Each structure stands twice: as structure tokens, then as C-alpha cells.
Image 1 (tube, rainbow, N blue to C red):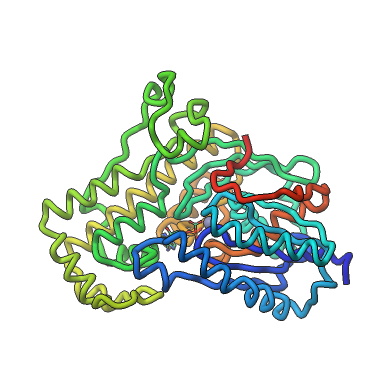
Image 2 (cartoon, protein in one colour):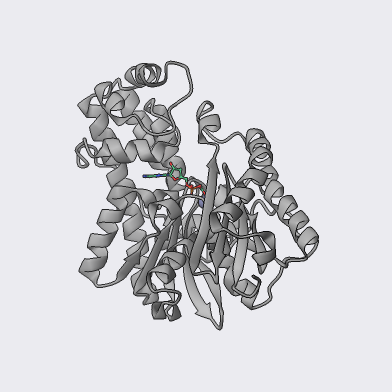
Length: 400
Ligand code: KG4
Ligand code: ZN
């Protein structure tokens, strides 16, 4: 029945078609995710045209499954929500067109949600569920690290009245951390997405074997008046950010490649790929025992060292930013937040510094629609509805 605060959300920004129903942004009744990983794994990355086609195929069954899981009908809903960006234009458009059609047919209001804000609300949704609807900690500002295949961004998230305001504090200048995981896995002959493979194999290597370092990004490199020619410069005013909170992951990916070439590990990587996948479809879940059987210790040490360095740099930038902003709550979210070493080391360091670090459940770490429904709730309460001309915004930024 309307009035119980049910929002049906749709997410289709990348390679997951998802629908969820969440009550008042704090109780998840259904969350359905149709993954396209098997399709894209054959190409070692997301193919935008295939993603759009698969979203078209999946969207109706996924929405139906969410309604069935919640035991609800369209007549029970109070609003609809949809991801409007950032993401792949064609993929976003499938979700937006469907949501607009449904809004028109049902007369329900539609809320547009930024995918990055969704990731932040994945953590807040977990927290509200744990505290049965409300968490007094939410009154406090938090530092949010969104770390996924497309983003590595630090935001100061502050509750203002009933909604949230965001300020971009730091970000990667080039590759996202998840992108580095995916590229390193690919060059070592492992599967896609690379994160889960590297996460599992890193446990068998020596993290101190290869001393990868991250250079401090220099002030003048991005404050010289002309913006650097990087992806980041095209989508955000990075010149105004403190260089201590800027990150870069394309260098370590190249360093891993050089190391592998120099130590003759590349031929073995090709053989590994053949042994694991035999030219056929890669398994959706990492076949770790099979991978261990065809991976020598030097490669395992390289994998462990890569992960150790990436997690170390994420920690350094995040904790320094939290300290400088005087924030005592850190939210870590996005696909890479599923990483076991990252979770363990962030928790240990947070305990040492007596600050709180919060992660979403593993299910809510990667793309899903429950986080979109949760982020939509305060906007629904504030009557911030999407305009009728809502369209996909592939480079949509979050906050100021
Ligand atoms: O949030 P997400 O599902 O999609 C994007 O919005 O990008 O994140 C996907 C990314 C991929 O790059 C994948 O390799 C990475 O998250 N990932 C991981 C792990 N699980 C997924 N990275 C490190 N460790 C993991 N366990
Ligand atoms: Zn995402």
C-alpha cells in the first residue's frame, strides 16, 4: 500500500542489470542483480554495445523478480528511482527509458540518482538496517572512499537537513584502482574481473617481495595553470584539490608489466590463460586451485606485492584526508571494497587511530539497485524529482 515508503530502483550503468525495493531508505525488501560478467569475460572487459543489448533483455524479468521477492505490486510503491550517471551512455539509457515509461504508466514520481552517491548509501543502508531504521551516527559528516572499476574518489559527505551534500576531496588522476586490478589480472593471464582472482592469489605470495612505490603527486603538476591531459582533468576541477589526496594507478600497472617482462613471467602468463580458459568462456568465479597449480611463487609474490602497494596507498590518502578534515567516520564502498586485505588493513588502522571505518556487505559492495533506492529516499522526502527530460549523463560528477 502506498505510504509505507517503498521505492523501486533500477540500476543499469555498467554491466549489471539490477532492481531493488527498499522501504524508507532503510529496509531492503528485494534486491535482484543480473550480471553480464560471463558475456564480457570473453573479451576481457565490458563491451558497451553488448552491455546495452543485455540490459534490454534483462530489465523486465529483473524488475518482475524484485516485485515478486518483495511480495509487492506496482500499486504498493511510493516512487521509482533510476541511476542517471555516471556510466555507459547506452547502458544508462535502457534503465532511464524503462523507468520513465513506468513512471508515466503508473503516475509514480521518479527520482534520479548519481551512481556514486548510490555506492555511499550502500554503507548507510547497512548501518540503518543494523540500527532498525535510524542511526544517530548519520548526523556526523563522513569521509567516503568510492573505489571501483570506474572510480577512485574521496568525498566529504555531510548530512544537511534531510538530505546529503558532497564535496570532492581527492581522486585518481588516471586509472581507477579496480581498473588496475583488472589490467594486472589480464596481463598475468587471470580472469575478468581481476579483483577476486588477485584477492585470492595474493594470500599465497610475499607482499614485501617487490617494493612498489607511489610517488607523491606534485603540486605544480596540476596547479601550473594548464590541466594535465588525464581522464580526471576532463571531468573534475582537480586543480582545486589538495595534491596529498590525489591518486594514480596507471604507474603501478606499468611497473607490474615491466617486472613481469624483465623476469620472464609473460610467457607463463599466456600459458596460464590457455590452461585456465582454453580459449573458451572464463569461469564466472575464480578457479583459484587451478590458478595456483599454474602460477609460480615469483608471480604470486608479484601479485601480493601489487595488492599490498595499492591498499597501502589507498590507506595513506584516506587516513590523511580524514585527519586533515577532522572526520572520525570513514565509509569505504565500490567493488574494490570487497577486497579482503583492504578490509583487514583499514579496520586495523582505524582501530589504532580510534576512528570508525564502515564497509557495505559484500553483496552491496558491487553494483546493485538497493543502494540506488536508499540514496533516492532523502531526495523523495525533499521532493527532488527528476525532470521529464531526464537523460543519461555518462560523466555526471558528484558534489562540488
Ligand atoms: O562497483 P563495481 O561492481 O563496478 C563499478 O562501478 O566499477 O566494481 C567492479 C570492480 C572491478 O574492477 C573488480 O575487479 C573490482 O571491483 N573488484 C575487486 C574485488 N571484487 C571486485 N577488487 C579487488 N578485490 C576484490 N575482492
Ligand atoms: Zn559501481
